[in-house]
Amino acid sequence: MNESWFDRMHRLRRPAFVLCASWFLLAILPAVAHAADSPRRPNFIFFLTDDQRADALSIAGNTVLKTPNIDQLARDGVRFTNAFVTTSLCAPSRASFLTGQWAHTHGVRTNERRSRLKPTQTIFADLLRDSGYEVAFIGKWHMDGAGRDRKWDYYFGFKGQGRYKHPEFAENDGPDRRYWKRYTDDMLGTKAIEFIRRPHTKPFCLFVFFKAPHRSWIRAPRHEKLFEDITVPEPDTLHTDYAGKPDAFKNADMKIGDFDDVVSFQKFAKDYYAVLTAVDENVGRVMKAVAEKKIVDDTAIIYSSDNGFFVGEWNFFDKRLMHEPSIRIPMILRYPRLIKPGATREDMVLNVDVAPTLLELAGSTRAGLDAGREHAATARGKRSRVARRLALRVLRVSCGPYGSQESRRSHGSLEVHPLLRGPTGIRALRSRRRSR
Ligand SMILES: [Ca+2]
Image (cartoon, rainbow, N blue to C red; front, top):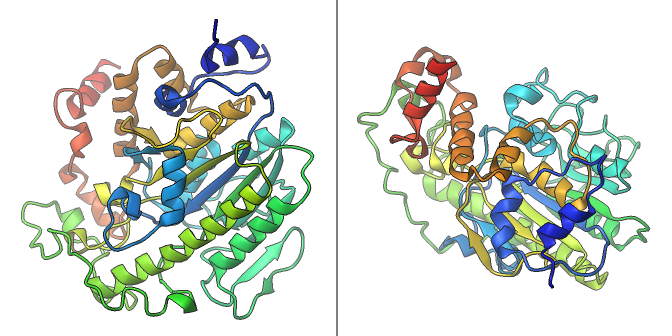
């Protein structure tokens, strides 16, 4: 009798390991094929962009941007069409990806320096390393310390936002060094390729965290004229009078024209898409190296972004506010040993689900990642309840536009996200709170 992959994982698990079925993994189970016979644990390549909205992919319907290489990942794997961040801001979301924890648990609530991930806090790379993985970080950490206070087998990264051109990187324990006439995301792609081409005696987990498409957008020289002759379609709400919207929303300091690098919708949208084009090209370069190394089947690829982005909706740029363009992210998982190609899933998945899911694929312990109770509940079959609970967490922790003080003052007028409306949404939250 054929044994399913899920049954096999349960039969093989060791008592010392806590193997909780993650919400994320349950979501892909319908697309999961029977496991290959090889007991080898997968390599991981985790591509993360900075501020890429969910539809900034041609496979997601974007009519301007062409992303053939990222699209190919989706065609070879599964694309989640309802993926969200729990806090739509760079540093808190990155910490959630790395720790599998909510922002109010890991403590990184803002992008300020004091809001850092402590070196003693466990990230999933630590657990993979402890279980025999080689771990490498390449790119943008964004939080204080630039990730250099963690244990890596290879490190190539930069402080803070870095810069698109003439970037400054540190490699392993070396000093910061300026790379003149180089483009940041091309450098990250090159270093990722160099790492992949090395001899590896252990499975590896490679983080490739791109700088793009964070503002201020500086294009690669080869993309200077990209989109020159087109007109980007305007969102319906670009010319809004904010009628009926709360003050915190109306007065958020993130309107087109508020800053020198966001002078017009057409210019900033084209720049935003142009820097993402360089990301797509570098994903293609890295995947070519994976193919040349003949590890395509042995390597799980995850592609996501630390938050979404307003591109003209409500005349906004930026993220922070809990609205669709801001909290919805791209999420792709490609692992041909387990996932049938070309699937899309509508189940809600979150940034906090990535860490436990990758650990589960590796058969590693997830001790220390304490967002696990949601996943345990899902394992018992409470799928819809879990989805709602996760969404409510989003509401609780996502409140901090540039005008954050004003947002707090007008908290009572904050809008309710459509996911939370109706009898199973916000009323359920109030009811549960009263019952405590
Ligand atoms: Ca970001």
